[in-house]
Length: 262
Length: 129
Picture (spheres, rainbow over the protein chains, first blue to last red):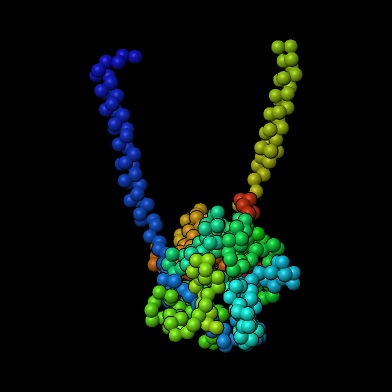
């Protein structure tokens, strides 16, 4: 080929022209595109917001397991939680337990009988520093930046159960079996889960989005308080300030957001 | 090339077997499924987006919805026409398209896709078959 200076310059010229076609094409194409997508995804006007949701449980007002029954029932019902006879398959979001199991190491030798015999309501603590989130390899469980709820994205969960090992509170349950046949009454508004995913309390994120308080708080009729931990005027802050409260395994540094008045 | 005959026969047999599905099924393409719209869907006339968009890209839209609702907590969808919808597969999509078997499933079966949405999301269809 003849590679004179003139020929090379000509080639450069044509190539640079060719390179210009793409930006021109894009400029025309994006205009068309912009017209297409004007959709928006927003939060509802009624949604309740907080920096970090927290709960205060007044354990003095719960004398027996029966007092907790309606709360647990309300939670199980709206979240389509299955009931398994086999304890190893159990799915728990909100349940009751004994003082020694809830606060291990906090038992005084001659503990007040009232406290010792009292049932304690336990659930996911929605820690400010959640170890389950760090353990999750797929970010299926995450701490929602907008309000501090530790949530599960069941779509991403691969069922490795690292989070269950990481959680010091046993707040997570694994679906060993398909839960659907074991749900007494299915609530059409909430999805079920499938075999092979981990689940736990979600602080009723779906209710907060509609401006409603969590189901257990609503069913507790004042025995539970729910609010923003970082709002100094909130009900939870007021209760924490005026009562002696304890948290579960506080020494681990996960900063649980469920407070117990004892 | 003393095995020429053998090789050629082999190649021909291979070609016949490899192309078998094509000529065996020639002219017998399964007909496009006909989707049935419920009275409610017909009355609404438009979906959250245009029919063409929904037909081609509903899965991308649902994926966006899932990401927004589950991870960010934004649950309201404002369509380009300005109408607001609750982003929910079981409670918004299936509210209009309450005939999953005649609407979703027909096309999915035809296209041989098996979405596992329904392992968790409830089929709240009123008209079950």
